[in-house]
Image 1 (cartoon, each protein chain N blue to C red):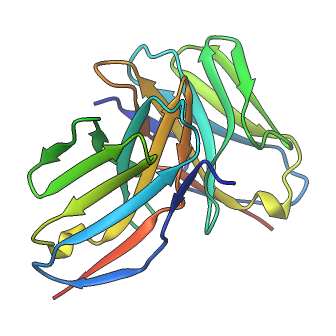
Image 2 (image 1 turned 180 degrees about the horizontal axis):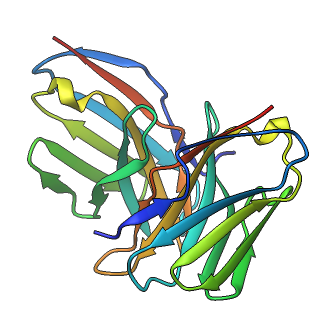
Length: 108
Length: 113
């Protein structure tokens, strides 16, 4: 079983739509959680860390449910520039585990 | 943010060649990582290092070795390149400030013919 699992998509949504991604992780000892964004042929870049209480950064909201071992990312008012692959990441000690990513395309 | 640079963006090598991929960070962080990324498989950890001359195997170390002689530099070595090592190679640095966050270099797309 993979450490981190994501729906690969693709998600194709119109501009202005709200889209949500979920991710599940298998290790209950996971300590930290992140969403990264990766553009085509570029490196992953940190989008936001995910805290137990949930956190928001502009149009982006991340939630963590430790009991069910899933992490979510909500994007409101989608922009064309949000088109990318979103990677769910967990951390245990110095080891990081990456999901294979969810592809999002925002359509004009 | 941490700045991470990698020696080449694109590299083409022949089977059996020895290949060096270099990664340099601009801060004094201890932990550095080498991943490869392949479609459908995501990022897989090859090796990581938590200090100078220290290294630990990741999930897929076979066919690779690493060198960390200076804190800012972490090198990945393919002793004898094979076609199944064609991949995107990403170096990452762990920043321990506030939250443990990895910062990635731009990646090296290696093709082995």
